[in-house]
Amino acid sequence: MINEIRDTPRALACVLDMSKLIEHVAEELYGRGIRRLLLTGCGSSYYAALAAVEASGSPFSFEAFPSSELLFYKAKLAPEGSAVVGISRSGRTAETVAALREAKARGIITVTITCSEDSPMATDADSKIVLDIGEERSIIMTKTFSSLSLASAMLCDRFDRILSGRVKEGWKLEELPEAASRVLKLEEKIKEMANAMRVKEFFIVLGQGPAHPVALEGALKLMETASLMTKALHSLEFRHGPMATVDERVGLLLIALKDDSTPAMARLADEMRQQGLSPIVISNAPELECDLELPWRHDPRLSTPVAIIPLQLLSFYISVNKGLNPDSPRRLHKFVGGF
Ligand code: F1P
Image 1 (cartoon, rainbow, N blue to C red):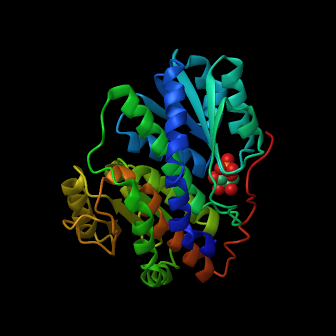
Image 2 (image 1 turned 120 degrees about the horizontal axis):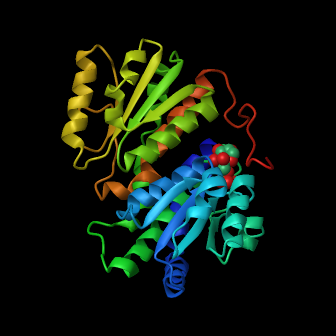
């Protein structure tokens, strides 16, 4: 797991090299009358789908659903002109394979974004984007989450450009590998933070807007890797009930990307401290008193592939501190089969 996390900059550079293929798929979809993308996946791949919708900046042209929701409820309601984009590292996750087949049976165009060329999802789909990043050996998904998020965001962005003619300001994709390398330099500091957090029994992970998928995926990493119970929330939702649950056993993580919500996030962190709580703040906003500074200076909507790295490292080191083996997580496999 740790080697795969450290390989993220290289994997992101490989995905950036695929921009021509991704552009081609976007053009092809538009040419076939598609005007809306429904993204779907399970677990980390679903959160990659959510991250891409956030990155698109057009949440009404792109939507994300867990594959099981699409399969049983949403595919039959898909508006005309929709295509379904299945996201999966393995290309074999049962619900995602079934959701794509269900969509296809209903005459909906399907696209697969995966790392596995010969998987059922890659074989079944009308178009495929196979990420050439090398096999991720870790059961826990790390560099592939960043890569799937980036590839999906690139597809949504390309499609949105054709649809709306809008080109996003400050959209600096090429900065991502270098930013990921800068985050990886924080590994020793994160290791110390993990040591201080090893006594926590439960984590609440907060993030809003583009930080929300990061909070969800970070919370999932803590569950999978360190066998901890977690809850991810839109940050300000914390004040509407969940704050009543917090005591010294609960770790609080606040991911705050610099954007329009920054003043509200600064007030939230202050309010927590006034209440005797000690949130761990991970942020790139100078306005916030932060515990870990995220080296990301560009559009916050693009930050997921790097903003997730501190949470992956934290999960890894908490797991090791607890005497667990992150490469052999309890009950987990690389993908989940039939249901
Ligand atoms: C999806 C997934 C992972 C999760 C677990 C089981 O796999 O749910 O996100 O961590 O290992 O599989 P995939 O569809 O991306 O291959």
